[in-house]
Every structure is written in structure tokens, then in C-alpha cells.
Length: 75
Image (tube, rainbow, N blue to C red; front, side, top):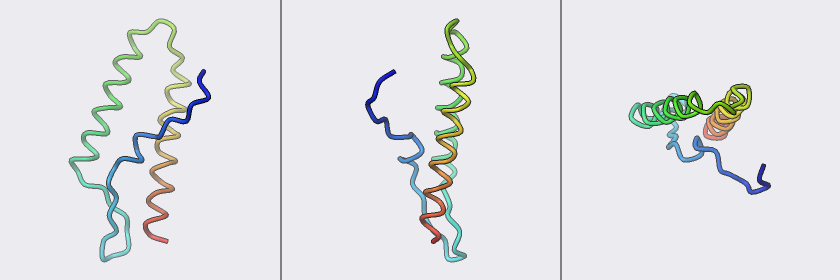
């Protein structure tokens, strides 16, 4: 495992704050993000050495990052 910092993919999703004070992500960005997650899952399914718990943890970290960014846009 590398000590190199890897920026979460969710950091590149554009977030906007609406007039109602909520943070939003455009549908096209969400669709692209979900398709990337699906492609990663397909790639991992073909890897006999894959640890699905690690993959789930990575997805949780992406969700946490996105949640923190959304909070930052509304704080």
C-alpha cells in the first residue's frame, strides 16, 4: 500500500448552493460518478485477489468526503 495521498474522486464533483441553502450536484455529474463506481465494481469482480470489504470502505470514504463538502457549502 502506498503512502501517496490520492484525492477522492468525489472532490472533483461540482457542488452548488441553491437559494434554498442546500448543496446540490448536477444530474450529469452524479450519473458519471455512479457509472465510474459501477465500472470499478465490474473490474474488481474479475480480480480473484479483491477484498470487497476494502472496496466498500473506499466507497464509504468517497461518500464521507462528499458529505463533508456539501456541509462546507451550506455552513
